[in-house]
Image (cartoon, rainbow, N blue to C red):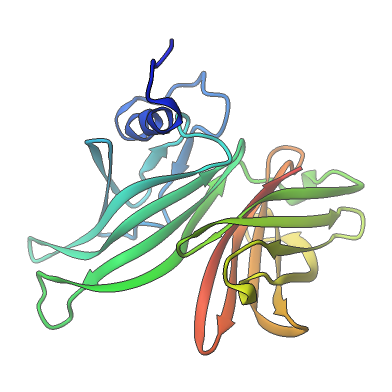
Amino acid sequence: CSSGGGGVAADIGAGLADALTAPLDHKDKSLQSLTLDQSVRKNEKLKLAAQGAEKTYGNGDSLNTGKLKNDKISRFDFIRQIEVDGQLITLESGEFQIYKQDHSAVVALQIEKINNPDKIDSLINQRSFLVSGLGGEHTAFNQLPGGKAEYHGKAFSSDDPNGRLHYSIDFTKKQGYGRIEHLKTPEQNVELASAELKADEKSHAVILGDTRYGGEEKGTYHLALFGDRAQEIAGSATVKIREKVHEIGIAGKQ
Protein backbone atom coordinates (compact mmCIF):
# COMPACT_ATOMS: atom_id res chain seq x y z
CA CYS A 1 0.00 0.00 0.00
CA SER A 2 1.77 3.16 -1.15
CA SER A 3 0.58 6.52 0.09
CA GLY A 4 1.84 8.39 -2.97
CA GLY A 5 3.33 11.85 -2.43
CA GLY A 6 2.90 13.53 0.90
CA GLY A 7 6.03 11.96 2.30
CA VAL A 8 6.71 11.62 5.99
CA ALA A 9 4.28 14.24 7.28
CA ALA A 10 1.33 12.61 5.54
CA ASP A 11 2.53 9.24 6.74
CA ILE A 12 2.67 10.28 10.40
CA GLY A 13 -0.64 12.06 9.94
CA ALA A 14 -2.46 8.94 8.80
CA GLY A 15 -1.42 7.20 11.99
CA LEU A 16 -2.83 10.03 14.09
CA ALA A 17 -6.29 9.81 12.55
CA ASP A 18 -6.19 5.99 12.72
CA ALA A 19 -5.42 6.15 16.44
CA LEU A 20 -8.75 7.93 16.93
CA THR A 21 -10.92 6.06 14.41
CA ALA A 22 -9.48 2.64 13.52
CA PRO A 23 -10.33 -0.49 15.50
CA LEU A 24 -7.61 -2.26 17.47
CA ASP A 25 -5.49 -4.33 15.08
CA HIS A 26 -3.70 -7.26 16.71
CA LYS A 27 -1.28 -7.43 13.77
CA ASP A 28 0.30 -4.16 14.92
CA LYS A 29 3.78 -5.09 16.07
CA SER A 30 4.39 -2.57 18.84
CA LEU A 31 2.39 -1.35 21.84
CA GLN A 32 -1.24 -1.61 20.72
CA SER A 33 -3.10 0.41 23.30
CA LEU A 34 -2.59 2.70 26.27
CA THR A 35 -5.10 3.01 29.11
CA LEU A 36 -5.87 6.66 29.84
CA ASP A 37 -6.20 6.45 33.60
CA GLN A 38 -3.71 9.17 34.56
CA SER A 39 -4.34 11.74 31.81
CA VAL A 40 -8.11 11.89 32.34
CA ARG A 41 -9.58 11.68 35.84
CA LYS A 42 -12.93 10.33 36.94
CA ASN A 43 -15.89 12.53 35.87
CA GLU A 44 -13.71 14.08 33.16
CA LYS A 45 -13.66 13.80 29.39
CA LEU A 46 -10.59 14.10 27.19
CA LYS A 47 -11.25 15.03 23.57
CA LEU A 48 -8.40 14.34 21.12
CA ALA A 49 -8.32 15.61 17.54
CA ALA A 50 -5.99 15.20 14.56
CA GLN A 51 -6.40 15.33 10.77
CA GLY A 52 -10.10 16.11 11.03
CA ALA A 53 -10.76 13.05 13.20
CA GLU A 54 -11.71 13.37 16.85
CA LYS A 55 -12.65 11.11 19.74
CA THR A 56 -13.67 11.62 23.35
CA TYR A 57 -12.22 9.44 26.11
CA GLY A 58 -13.20 8.88 29.73
CA ASN A 59 -11.13 7.68 32.67
CA GLY A 60 -9.91 4.13 31.99
CA ASP A 61 -10.64 4.22 28.24
CA SER A 62 -7.89 3.06 25.88
CA LEU A 63 -6.12 4.98 23.13
CA ASN A 64 -5.29 2.83 20.10
CA THR A 65 -1.52 3.30 19.78
CA GLY A 66 -0.78 0.51 17.28
CA LYS A 67 -0.82 2.86 14.27
CA LEU A 68 1.37 5.53 15.84
CA LYS A 69 5.01 5.79 14.80
CA ASN A 70 7.56 4.24 17.14
CA ASP A 71 10.29 6.37 18.75
CA LYS A 72 8.53 9.59 17.69
CA ILE A 73 6.32 12.10 19.47
CA SER A 74 2.78 11.92 18.05
CA ARG A 75 0.78 15.11 18.65
CA PHE A 76 -2.97 15.63 19.03
CA ASP A 77 -5.02 18.68 19.93
CA PHE A 78 -6.71 18.09 23.27
CA ILE A 79 -9.50 19.55 25.37
CA ARG A 80 -10.06 18.31 28.93
CA GLN A 81 -13.60 18.84 30.24
CA ILE A 82 -15.68 18.09 33.32
CA GLU A 83 -19.44 17.98 33.70
CA VAL A 84 -20.84 20.18 36.46
CA ASP A 85 -24.62 20.30 36.98
CA GLY A 86 -25.23 19.09 33.44
CA GLN A 87 -22.89 21.70 31.95
CA LEU A 88 -19.59 20.75 30.28
CA ILE A 89 -16.82 23.00 31.59
CA THR A 90 -13.50 23.10 29.71
CA LEU A 91 -10.64 22.76 32.18
CA GLU A 92 -7.74 23.15 29.77
CA SER A 93 -6.68 22.80 26.16
CA GLY A 94 -3.46 22.37 24.24
CA GLU A 95 -1.40 19.58 22.71
CA PHE A 96 -1.49 15.93 23.82
CA GLN A 97 1.88 14.31 23.11
CA ILE A 98 2.62 10.59 23.17
CA TYR A 99 6.05 9.03 22.73
CA LYS A 100 5.71 5.34 21.93
CA GLN A 101 8.17 2.46 21.96
CA ASP A 102 7.58 -1.28 21.39
CA HIS A 103 6.44 -2.01 24.94
CA SER A 104 5.77 1.39 26.52
CA ALA A 105 4.53 4.92 26.05
CA VAL A 106 4.85 8.27 27.82
CA VAL A 107 2.08 10.87 27.60
CA ALA A 108 2.60 14.61 28.13
CA LEU A 109 0.29 17.59 27.96
CA GLN A 110 1.53 20.90 26.55
CA ILE A 111 -1.19 23.01 28.13
CA GLU A 112 -1.87 26.31 26.34
CA LYS A 113 -5.09 27.56 27.97
CA ILE A 114 -6.80 26.92 31.29
CA ASN A 115 -10.21 27.65 32.75
CA ASN A 116 -10.75 31.27 33.74
CA PRO A 117 -11.47 31.22 37.49
CA ASP A 118 -13.46 34.47 37.17
CA LYS A 119 -15.63 33.40 34.25
CA ILE A 120 -16.53 29.72 34.27
CA ASP A 121 -17.16 29.24 30.54
CA SER A 122 -14.03 30.97 29.23
CA LEU A 123 -10.33 30.15 28.97
CA ILE A 124 -7.22 32.21 29.66
CA ASN A 125 -3.74 31.72 28.21
CA GLN A 126 -1.49 29.93 30.67
CA ARG A 127 1.17 27.54 29.44
CA SER A 128 2.58 24.55 31.27
CA PHE A 129 4.03 21.15 30.44
CA LEU A 130 2.99 18.07 32.36
CA VAL A 131 4.02 14.43 31.98
CA SER A 132 0.56 13.03 32.55
CA GLY A 133 0.78 9.30 31.95
CA LEU A 134 2.85 6.21 31.48
CA GLY A 135 1.87 2.74 30.41
CA GLY A 136 2.58 -0.44 28.55
CA GLU A 137 3.81 -3.94 29.27
CA HIS A 138 5.42 -3.53 32.70
CA THR A 139 8.38 -5.69 33.70
CA ALA A 140 7.63 -7.70 36.85
CA PHE A 141 10.30 -7.20 39.50
CA ASN A 142 10.68 -10.97 39.98
CA GLN A 143 11.24 -11.46 36.22
CA LEU A 144 14.23 -9.13 35.89
CA PRO A 145 17.19 -10.38 33.82
CA GLY A 146 20.74 -10.59 35.15
CA GLY A 147 23.78 -8.61 34.07
CA LYS A 148 23.81 -4.99 32.97
CA ALA A 149 22.00 -2.99 30.29
CA GLU A 150 22.42 0.38 28.58
CA TYR A 151 19.36 2.33 27.45
CA HIS A 152 19.28 5.21 24.97
CA GLY A 153 16.32 7.27 23.85
CA LYS A 154 14.35 10.47 24.13
CA ALA A 155 13.97 13.34 26.60
CA PHE A 156 11.36 15.99 25.84
CA SER A 157 10.04 19.02 27.66
CA SER A 158 8.02 22.14 26.92
CA ASP A 159 8.66 23.28 23.30
CA ASP A 160 11.74 21.08 23.26
CA PRO A 161 11.40 17.61 21.67
CA ASN A 162 15.06 16.89 20.93
CA GLY A 163 16.68 15.86 24.20
CA ARG A 164 18.41 12.51 24.67
CA LEU A 165 18.27 10.00 27.52
CA HIS A 166 21.18 7.74 28.48
CA TYR A 167 20.69 5.30 31.34
CA SER A 168 22.52 2.24 32.74
CA ILE A 169 21.06 -0.49 34.94
CA ASP A 170 23.01 -3.09 36.89
CA PHE A 171 20.44 -5.84 37.46
CA THR A 172 22.71 -7.76 39.82
CA LYS A 173 23.27 -4.78 42.13
CA LYS A 174 19.70 -3.48 41.53
CA GLN A 175 21.05 0.01 40.73
CA GLY A 176 20.53 2.49 37.90
CA TYR A 177 21.91 5.91 36.90
CA GLY A 178 22.06 8.12 33.83
CA ARG A 179 21.74 11.58 32.33
CA ILE A 180 19.65 13.81 30.11
CA GLU A 181 21.38 15.70 27.28
CA HIS A 182 20.69 18.11 24.42
CA LEU A 183 17.68 19.96 25.85
CA LYS A 184 17.79 23.67 24.99
CA THR A 185 17.72 24.86 28.62
CA PRO A 186 21.15 23.89 30.01
CA GLU A 187 19.85 23.36 33.57
CA GLN A 188 17.43 20.70 32.32
CA ASN A 189 20.35 18.53 31.20
CA VAL A 190 20.54 16.84 34.57
CA GLU A 191 22.31 13.86 36.00
CA LEU A 192 19.93 11.06 37.00
CA ALA A 193 21.63 10.08 40.23
CA SER A 194 22.25 6.46 41.13
CA ALA A 195 19.13 4.92 42.64
CA GLU A 196 17.73 1.56 43.69
CA LEU A 197 15.82 -0.69 41.31
CA LYS A 198 12.87 -2.02 43.32
CA ALA A 199 9.29 -3.28 43.18
CA ASP A 200 6.36 -0.87 43.44
CA GLU A 201 3.01 -1.74 45.06
CA LYS A 202 2.00 -3.65 41.90
CA SER A 203 5.27 -5.64 41.90
CA HIS A 204 6.45 -3.76 38.79
CA ALA A 205 10.14 -2.92 38.46
CA VAL A 206 10.73 0.82 39.05
CA ILE A 207 13.50 3.27 39.91
CA LEU A 208 12.97 6.49 41.90
CA GLY A 209 15.91 8.86 42.23
CA ASP A 210 17.14 12.44 42.36
CA THR A 211 17.98 14.78 39.49
CA ARG A 212 21.18 16.80 39.94
CA TYR A 213 22.76 19.73 38.14
CA GLY A 214 26.19 21.08 39.04
CA GLY A 215 26.30 18.65 41.95
CA GLU A 216 23.11 20.06 43.50
CA GLU A 217 19.83 18.22 43.92
CA LYS A 218 17.22 19.77 41.59
CA GLY A 219 14.28 17.37 41.69
CA THR A 220 13.37 13.73 41.23
CA TYR A 221 12.96 11.16 38.49
CA HIS A 222 10.76 8.11 38.14
CA LEU A 223 11.37 5.27 35.68
CA ALA A 224 9.41 2.08 35.12
CA LEU A 225 10.80 -0.91 33.21
CA PHE A 226 8.87 -2.43 30.31
CA GLY A 227 8.98 -5.61 28.24
CA ASP A 228 9.42 -9.24 29.30
CA ARG A 229 13.20 -8.78 29.46
CA ALA A 230 13.26 -5.16 30.64
CA GLN A 231 13.96 -4.03 27.07
CA GLU A 232 12.67 -0.48 27.72
CA ILE A 233 12.42 2.23 30.35
CA ALA A 234 10.02 5.17 30.46
CA GLY A 235 9.03 7.84 32.94
CA SER A 236 9.57 11.45 33.92
CA ALA A 237 11.94 13.83 35.65
CA THR A 238 11.48 17.14 37.45
CA VAL A 239 13.98 20.00 37.62
CA LYS A 240 13.54 23.12 39.73
CA ILE A 241 15.00 26.23 38.09
CA ARG A 242 14.56 29.54 39.96
CA GLU A 243 11.38 28.56 41.86
CA LYS A 244 9.72 26.94 38.82
CA VAL A 245 9.49 23.16 38.52
CA HIS A 246 9.93 21.85 34.95
CA GLU A 247 8.82 18.37 33.90
CA ILE A 248 10.60 16.19 31.34
CA GLY A 249 9.33 13.03 29.65
CA ILE A 250 11.98 10.31 29.29
CA ALA A 251 12.04 6.95 27.49
CA GLY A 252 14.66 4.61 26.11
CA LYS A 253 15.45 1.11 24.93
CA GLN A 254 18.37 -1.30 25.00
